[in-house]
Amino acid sequence: MTGGVLTGREWIDDWKRRADKLRDDTLEMAEKMERLSVSSVNGDNDIRVTVNSQGVVTEIRFKESVRDKPADDIAQQVLSTMRAAQNKVIEGARLVMEQTVGTESETGRAIVSGLEQQLRPRES
Image (cartoon, rainbow, N blue to C red; front, side, top):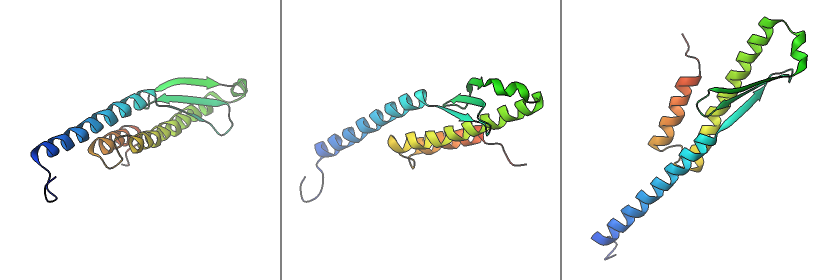
């Protein structure tokens, strides 16, 4: 560095370090998002819904006590428990962004925003 100004080589080295860090952070983010899975349980603790990082249901578990409930109630509770799990995915994605590419980065904002648009119902 000469007089506070980076030389051409220093500028290139600095740019490469930042590009390498961004690549590494992005790869880490992708790996964490791929592994992200969250579950939610209904209020009676007898229905559990698990979703992946895209909010897609990967598992639904019932305890025997659901047999005593009307089918319409079970259906409604499955849907509300699924929505709760999907909201947790958004928060989980936010945390992954915070730990990797940053919540204010273009990538971080785009991923969280995309999940919000996909998983949160639109107001009419």
